Length: 186
Picture 1 (cartoon, rainbow, N blue to C red):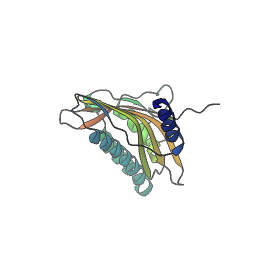
Picture 2 (picture 1 turned 90 degrees about the vertical axis):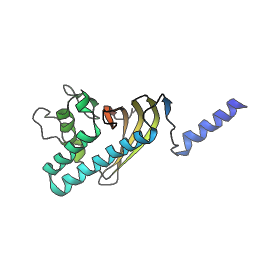
Picture 3 (picture 1 turned 135 degrees about the horizontal axis):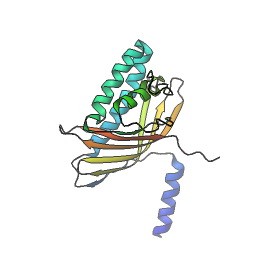
Picture 4 (picture 1 turned 60 degrees about the vertical axis):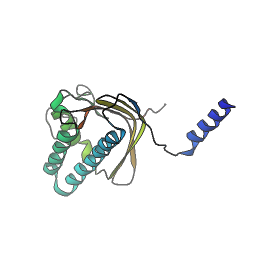
């Protein structure tokens, strides 16, 4: 009976299309689920602000927005950030510096000639869908998908893993950012 109920529940989840709230796994947590979700929402809002600044005021305003986002959301002041952007390729697949992350967001950097500026795509909305959140002491990790709406209303979905760490001031900072396109069977 329990197996049948589990199977029925699984079938409903698989076909309903409904996103259910995730409850974080917590172990001796100094970070709250609300802080994690707020940090994710702040990242999405920053992406939209960078896009809007570029559309209305050009690359220099987009650069200012991107720099502000990197300085407030990421933990570069704590050490290298493990940053693997969605469409990055060798030799710059993984970026551990602020300059590498900035280039991915806005391009215009001779050291990263393949970067076109991911955040310059006139994104209008970002929705984070967590599959799981794990919190332990001063760190949190999340895995799931991010849905980003473009100027024509089309939604781009990426698989996203984030790692967060409380800094000395008690602010939650991104120290791991891994993004990739969802697997597509050939």
